Image (cartoon, rainbow, N blue to C red; front, side):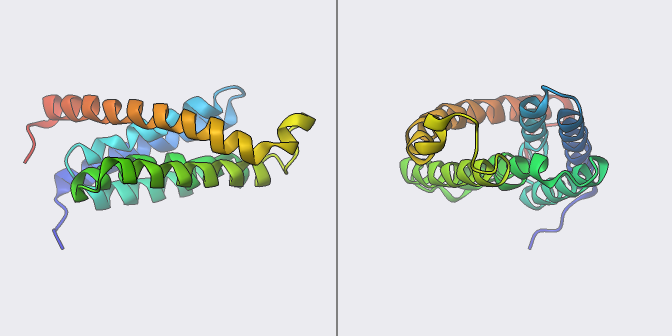
Length: 176
């Protein structure tokens, strides 16, 4: 196993701090929850720009735990980040590293997203959205609408990771 350098630890700590702040503010300020998830996910791209997978995983765990503590253990509000948004950047990076066929990887990630969306609907919304049509056809809505949304989201996040890589390399030095 590769030894993690102090430089990579510092990048991971920065990512953890930014993700924790984004999640905490997103959860505590009404209307900013989705923004908090997205900004926290962007923050976790920082160690991945230097191929620091363990550092990213530790930043994800740290941000999840700290945001739970700072929000008063609002587990249902942090759940979408824990089950999907926080792990998605790492999943994309590992897909690139292992060279898994991109269509197979996207199909697996789409299923993961659909399961995460179902879990959020079930546990966060209590299987009741106050819209009878949605409650009746939620699985079909998630399988079709969620999957279409995920493919666009995944593509845009891949572009964001490339931009983050360029930015981190510009400010913190070239890739190893």
